[in-house]
Image 1 (cartoon, one colour):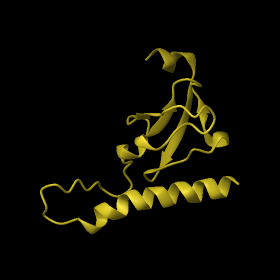
Image 2 (tube, rainbow, N blue to C red):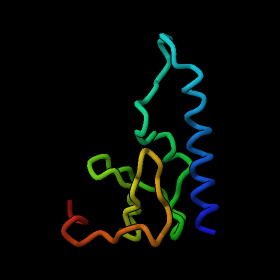
Image 3 (tube, rainbow, N blue to C red):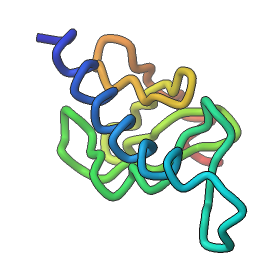
Length: 97
């Protein structure tokens, strides 16, 4: 089941970015991102798989953070890994920052 979740997330990621790849030209409205960079527009559709609450993007650590559960999901090559067993719990010192 986890493999299908990853595959689904990759499909969503490619679907969101394929439109940009087609429009990569000297067009003023093109907002192309370098490869392997997380697209913050994905935050509109992504939620925590455990709590179903919105996620916050932590650019410094390249993670998606669920504030309610204090869990951070890693982002690898621009693709969020929302598998709960791969997430890490935030320690109390990071929660205060």
